[in-house]
View (cartoon, helix red, strand yellow):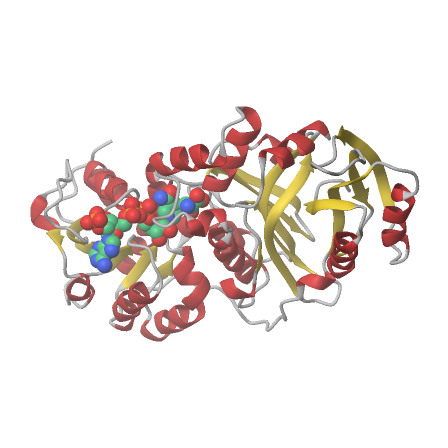
Length: 442
Ligand code: NAP
Ligand code: HSE
């Protein structure tokens, strides 16, 4: 819909970056000009875009808008809002800090930046009365930060758990449903615009850890930085892991989990998890994300949608842009996140969950009892024990081998790590112990 609104004031927007996400934001600002004016009460004009290479052909965007001088752009006096879509941490921190210090509001999708410097940047924004909004930084198009900051702020959140990285969900889903090879699935995710510029951040879990830090900070009114999050990625997972998990009736996912402990500490972790097929997160396919929030009063809520990609992420950026534009128009700043608690981040060793272990042993009398005793001596209760394959021994080894699969009852991370270390040293063990954490069995 278009409405003639020539008498409205103009809000001038500068953008840093015009890649997968930025090009979509530029398109929407141009295409939706009249509707944005009607929704914000101001003409929202994109007046400059900083990129690495201003000579690149960018169809549909006025070439006169481009500059390679990002520092010059954020220092301009005539801008009301900066949209940061470059990525990276240290150089971008400088740019965003400069804009905020000058009272220019910032919308960003940069989770790595916020997980590392969120507290500092929020502090600068509070001092100058600028807005700092970052809905697109977590879970792409899914509105999750605003519900945590606003809709649920009167409740007490106890847990946030979900799939927050589209690239890894895409890779694991392709490996599970089509038998795709890891590298091929990653290349597809990159081609579709889901992966970070350096996909190591995705596959080693750092991107999800940054998002987990942001979620935990907002949910628990505290400050958690990315480097405080326990982080294990998916690059070590093999087709054999996927096959064993599938045979068990489970699905492998990379999850972020943030919860309050009974000691009122914050436990925040990112790692592969196996979920029963019947669990709602098991049927989240492709680059979709899904997040459960548990709170004392509301109970359990689930948010789901596209977690990556240019247009879905641009949708979240545009939501923030409209909010910030409305605030600028009224001459106010939005309410900053309430980080008033100083909760300690709990050590990973104390985390309790179920575990699934798979390992090859000599197939001979007594081995199962010896393996079981490694757990029983530490008080770890076993839920199921199965021999899931019989194998030929390695060359020169007469003894056939058996693959054992063990699901424990709930136990502490540090205790299970001790069991793994002891099993690893046993002469009956061949190869390595594969350890996976289990969720969704309660
Ligand atoms: P991208 O496709 O790699 O685009 C990056 C843009 O930044 C490019 O336009 C590049 O210019 C420009 N740029 C890089 N270095 C620059 C510099 N020093 N000065 C000026 N411009 C520079 O990245 P993206 O996928 O759009 O991601 C952007 C941000 O959104 C990142 O923080 C990312 O984590 C976040 N995000 C992405 C997604 C997604 O699905 N892609 C989803 C959520 C959040 P050139 O075009 O000239 O190379
Ligand atoms: N690389 C990120 C992902 C982009 O795959 O989820 C969305 O934040």
